[in-house]
Image (cartoon, rainbow, N blue to C red; front, side, top):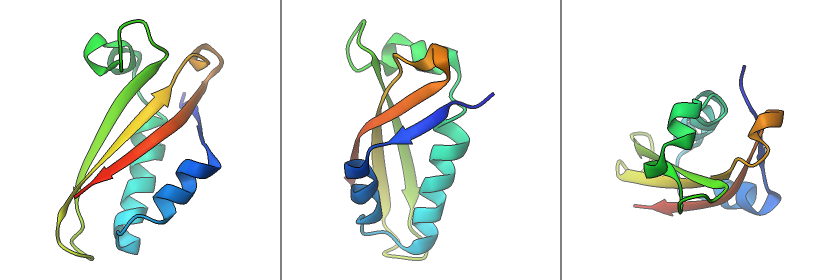
Length: 99
């Protein structure tokens, strides 16, 4: 069963303002709903994916080429808080974009 994925208003505004084509933004939203919201415990709890050992945060990176926009490769990093995962909730607390 997927997690309920919360994104802060600040991070949602950041996503909406990214220099990506509408198609790329749709792909990014699908990634969040299909991958992050369905993240496995194995991935989420893997020490290599944790921000620091024992922290309530894990990192997910999405790489994409914006074929309908600038044609460039874009990397979007998500920092997700999972201390409420037992209750089915994940919180996206930080998003960073690199071209």
